Image (cartoon, one colour):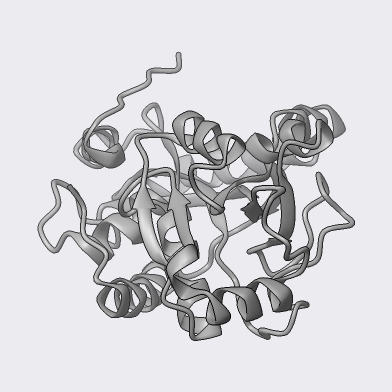
Length: 261
């Protein structure tokens, strides 16, 4: 059974799983918004992202993209940076919410390029895309899933993806790193976890089941059709991985003064 528990920036669902019996019957699939972005912004959460979970495995990611309205003359990242530096009052960037991966992507972009584009947060991707298409904002950071149909119809431009590797959905679009900013990587990754304290035999069965599922071409095709980049891997050091990413996100949040509502 799948049960969606929205609310509080995924904290409600995360807390429910963290506090569940570690018997293998209650699992959580969520993104780095849950495990590293929320903790970077909120020191007191209803769950412990490091100690509260037992990792089963990484399952994939969703690429984010730097988008622009067609009226923006820039068609590449260097051109955008030059235009924004020459006309700083004309450039702001939109995201699909304060403290979201798109907000962090924009903050990282400002830091990497030396720009100071003002952040305009929206309540969701749909409203963000509507205003980008309408020209109310010149630039935004959104998922490639949201961007693909609008790009195909010519309503927007895609300058780059924020991930370390190119997106399979937009293989011709360069990464920000390729555009002149090595090391740039803001990826919305997805992981499957269980409550901490999972018995070793149960974890072994879940590990094997996830590896088998993710090796299935049918599973991979369905994930790609939904806009995900399949990317299974076991997670050897969950505390180390999460702690390091929280620290990285805290630096970005403090520099850009990112705050949640």
